[in-house]
Length: 280
Image (cartoon, rainbow, N blue to C red; front, side, top):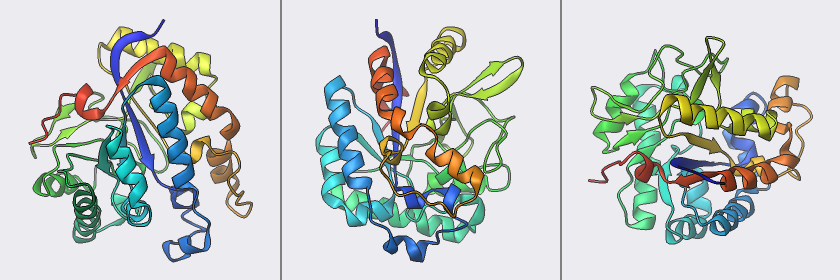
């Protein structure tokens, strides 16, 4: 039986060669050397969401939107929320304030012009807003965003703000921040928001953790993943570091089936609907 609480389904629309795990071996000027797979994979997700009659928030990378405008239009036409994932998938922690603003603005302007709408949501690549760049929230608020989902209150080598709020809250800059979900297990904040952890955990464990989160925290749950995570046929970058390869390739062949079960067992909607985000 499907759990009745409405939770947020989100997709970070980027390709396999954009990910931070491979940034040491693939530079942005090399992206053109790889055959994109994001269009086909994202359309598979649209079909899956239509099968389950759910709507999702798609955090779209500007680089993808410029090359696949028909895909972004289709996402919007099917009633999903389109939000920004920035333009060049560079972590905010590696950008100056000026570069960050320019990157976000380029993506926002392109998506709004393409769809004729006002974007309200943003997610930083690799949840890279943290202790040393809180100014990013000021820039997002100034650019007209209503919410962000750019923090993960865990310890991780690429990101993490373990002592920041775990649930959606309004910041002093006026923007609502919606952190990636965690669950306290044996006193430690355990990541349960999706991505690589979803691929790594057996589905039964994921279902148990999400159910416990909904029962004990009395908060809506939000889930994230990427189109490349359902693509077991993507090229293997065997020259990448071992840890990066494990993170990226583990259980790719199982993700689609697990996602199908997740959509069946819980109720899903967009970030705007779940968290009652005002579009004005």
